[in-house]
Image (tube, rainbow, N blue to C red; front, side):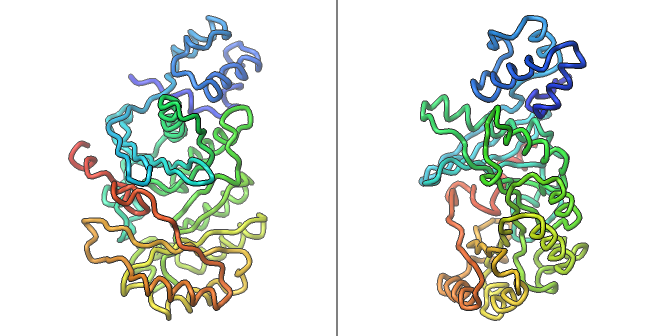
Length: 353
């Protein structure tokens, strides 16, 4: 029987668990430091932790439960890790190099049930949620790779945009955020963490109420219900109106913008009329949201879609600008190794699992 990863504890949870087993809070601080500052991969390496505590931890937990199956490196320096879970399932994690530092895109589920018609991740139905330890383990796997390469750079930014719908794995995702934010460990700032959702309105409200301080991105991809339902089946259950109401609730409680993600699909949602409809939808939220335009990345199984022409992207961008909507175009990373937005679902997964 597999033992879970100790990364699955937040600091408070680890303190409480050790306390239940007769250990003082100072012991949790020691263990936490070894895990996230010194980044050891074996309990016996924690040389200043007493033997009884180490034996207890080793009896109940492992540290890293993810194995590296394969690794691909893009011409732009992006690295896609295909990681093997204890049950044999495979997931993907992506390291991106920016001028501002190292960013990691983490996965939250094995497969995805949202089923966006342009996205590779939903080609495999969700089989289970990842534990918080498996999500934290992705960050640690990437950081240990950096350590081994003696590059010295620390992971500084996280985007929860990999395989799966993060808000469909809500509690584990929240514990993950609490762990990576903790100032005694990885200390990744809340403003450097972005969680993306396809639009689970009730979970956006719950997320807001947790007051985690991290950034929110919403996969919108269409300016009206008819078109959004066509390309995103979730819109049948949660149309744009309740989604925007939930976004308004988030905006009312946070002093930061929401990102509206918009993948541009040739002759589907990329016309000037769509940009004008999107500007109308944004409405008086113009100072509170940013529209992030995403050039479509090819997926073999979704051959009905093509990337918008550069001229169409320019017109869409300029139309939003003229309507005083804050807009940007996402910089692409790892397209040549199927690691870019919408491409995560390794071609090896279907054959292996």
